[in-house]
Amino acid sequence: MKTRTPEAHLLPQVDLTRLPQHIAIIMDGNGRWAKKRRLPRIAGHRAGIRAVRQVVEACARMGVRCLTLYAFSVENWKRPHTEVKLLMDLLREYLKKEIAELNKNNIRFGAIGRISNLPPLVQKDLYTTIEKTQDNTGLRLTLALNYGGRAELIDAVRDLVTHLHRDGALDVNAITEDELSRHLYTRDLPDPDLLIRTSGEMRLSNFLLWQVAYCEIWVTDTLWPDFKEQDLFQAVADFQKRERRYGGLG
Ligand code: IPE
Ligand code: IPE
Ligand code: MG
Image 1 (cartoon, rainbow, N blue to C red):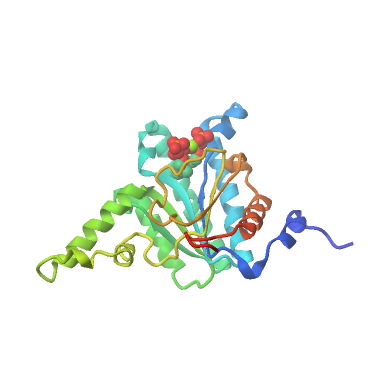
Image 2: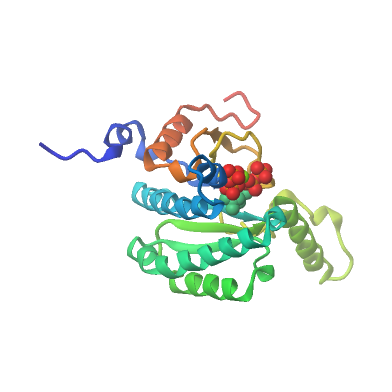
């Protein structure tokens, strides 16, 4: 008998010809996962990395073009110093271990957020990973780090106004949606089609505020470390049943 992979019962529900181009995920619930097991929060973050690996690989195999993962928000600095430090250490460990796997799966790595305010060694590892995967042509994996949607909009407006000022007087009519989009961190990514949030919270927590204007939102109670590729296939299958209207009549 042919061995059935765990996802075998769900993958047929997914139409591989109509995949979302860009999936964005708010990976939430690591702390609650650890608490349930009476473990320190960092154990939840560590378990969360296993879920990251699974989802990245599943997206690459399915043929999704872009995957953006919310890993650390501008607000997350409010957490205790020890948790922040351990998160940064875990990120560095992940990057170092993952380069070979990313290359094996033809994945191009990127990062969005106020990267220059991250610890210098984290920045170094990020740039190394970006450089070493830059020629890959498959999935574009982007980590949102020290990311905030409002911060991104402020940075984009500053950038845009500086750019427009270069040629002398500022013409406010030159500020258009397309022009602003060209100054966002995500300028070379399409807007997400599907936003997944784990752990049940019905909020955006400052993630991709501009880009999710017409994104389909899918929330699951599953805690991020328990999120498996089956959950991803379920999200995509549900997404494919939605009618997207963009304000029109469909
Ligand atoms: C998400 O899990 C990971 C990060 C924000 C870095 P949390 O750490 O927010 O887990 P909960 O929400 O406390 O369960
Ligand atoms: C959102 O989760 C940020 C990340 C997943 C990195 P949070 O746990 O920080 O969000 P809130 O505090 O519940 O809104
Ligand atoms: Mg949380």
